[in-house]
Amino acid sequence: MPKHAFFAFAKFSLVVVAGLAIFAGPSVAQTPPIPPQVGSQNTVTAAPPVPRPQTTPCVVTLFADYAFENFNAQTFSYTPPANCPGPWEKIVFEANFNVTAGVQYDRTAAIYLGHANIYYGTTPEPSENFGPSWHIERDLTDYASLFTNPQSGEVDLGNLVDSTYTGIIYGTAVVELYPLAEHASAPITPDAVYPMPDAEGGAATLNTTTDQLTATFTLPANIERAYLDVITQNQSSDEFWYTCVPNDVAAELESCGNTAFREAEISVDGTPAGVAPVYPWVFTGGVDPWLWFPLPGVQTLDFVPYRVDLTPFAGLLSNGQPHTVAVSVYNADSYFLATASLLVYLDHGSTQITGEVTENTIGAGPNPDVDENLTTNTNGSIDGSVSVSSSRSFEIAGFVNTSHGRVTTHVYQDVDFENTQQFTINATQYDQDITQNTHVNSTTLTRNGLQVFATYEQFKYPLVFDIDVIYNSDGSADQVSTVHQGYESDILSPNFIGAVSNHVDSTDTLVFAADGSYSNQNQKSDQTYITGNTTGYHYDCTLEAANNVLTSIGRGCSQK
Image (cartoon, helix red, strand yellow):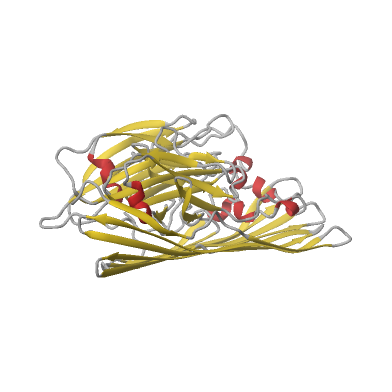
C-alpha cells in the first residue's frame, strides 16, 4: 500500500458504495442543530456562543433553506430594518447547516456581503447512515458599516451531487442587530470596510508565490487607523502543506514539495507592509475522516481571520491617490484561496490628514532555513528528518497629523515558524511524525502628544501530527494517526485584557483488510476551549468522544 493511502482514504466518498439512495430530509430551518448529547455522533465543537447584550435584537434573515447541490454561487439581498437604526451595540451572524446522509466531501463555505467576507469555513463530511447538522456564530460588530445600507450578498458553497456524491447541504443564515441600551455608548467601530476582491466570485486563487490577491482603492483623505483582516485557505496540492518537504526529497519521501513553510505576505503599492501567518486548518476529510467524528479540528467549521495592523500607512493611504493592497502566499504550490477586508477608522474632526511611513524593516520576504538529515540504507529504507524554519523581526512606523495632534504608531513584530518531520520508511512501515509551531509576538506603541499607549498581542499555532502505517505480511495494514492542534491568543491593551486557548486532540486507527475493505477502531478525541477577558466574561468547555460518539460534556459548556 503506498504511503499516500491515508490521503486517498480521507474522503468518505471512497468508503461508501456509490448510488446510495439520497435521504432528502428536512432542511436546516425546520430541523435546528442538535444540542450536544452524550452518545451522539452529531458534529459539535466546544467553541462558545458569542456573548450578547441585554437588549432585544432585530433579526434579519440573509437566506433561508438554501440547498447546495452544485457549484453555482447563490445570492441574497440585505436591507437594514427600518425600526432598528444604528449604531448597534453588537452584530452577531448566525448560520445553521446540515448535510444529508450519504457520500460527500468536506466543502468550503464562504459568505459575502457587498463582496466583503463575513463568514469562512468548511463543512463536515456525512457518513452512510448519518447526516450531521452544525451551528455557526460570529461577532461582526467591526463590520457594522456594511449593515447600514442595502447590500447584495453571495454564498459560495460549491457541492457536487450526482449518483456517487449524494450528500446535499442545506443552510439558513441571519444577522442579529442589537440596539444600544439606554444611556449606553456606541462601540468604536471602523467607518468603512473595503473588500478584497471587490467583485463577485469570492476568494482569489493563488497558485504560486508570485500570485497575488490585489485591490486598488482611492480612500478617504482622513484615515487615522487601518487594518487588514486576512484569510488564506489551503486547497488542492496545498491542503496538507504542513506535511510537505523540500523539492529535492519529495519523490523519495512521497510527499508534496516547496517545504512545509507557508506564510501570507501583505504589501501596499508593492512595498512589504505586514505578515499573516497561515493557520494549519485540517478539514473533516483530513488524513483520516474518523479523527473528526464527532469533534472537528480547531476552527474547521469557522476560520478566524488574522488582522494585520496597517496604521503606519494611514498617512500614505489618505493622500488622495489610488493605492494597491496585495496579499500573496510564500511557497504556495497550487493552491491557496485568499480573501481580505480593509478596515479603516477616520478622523471625524478633519477632512484631510497628512502623514508618512517613517520606518519599515520588514524586508523583501522570508528567508527560511532548510535542514535535511536523511539516511538512505542499502536496502532502500529511509530514516531521518527534514525541517524548515523561519524567523523574522521587524518594525514599521508612521505618523498622521490629525485634528487632535500628531499620532505616531510603531508596530514591532517577531514571527517565528518551525516544522520538523521525522521519517521511517521501509518495507513494513511508513512513519511521518510532524511537529510544527508558529509563534507571533506583536507590540504596538501609539504616541499622541505626551500620551503613549502600548498593546501587546501573542499568537501560537501548535500542531503535532503523527501518521504511522504498518504493512502486514498478509497484505493488510494498520494506520495509527494522532493529532494535537491548538490556537492560542493573548491581548494586553490599555483598556482590555483577553485570552483564548482552543485545543483539539484526536487519535484513530484505520484497519485495512487484505481484500480492500477497512474500518476504524480505538478512536478517541477531546477539545478544550477556554477564553476570558477583563469585561468579566469567562468560558471553559471540554468535550470528549470515543468510538466516534460524544462521551462527555463539561459543566462549563453552553450552547445557544
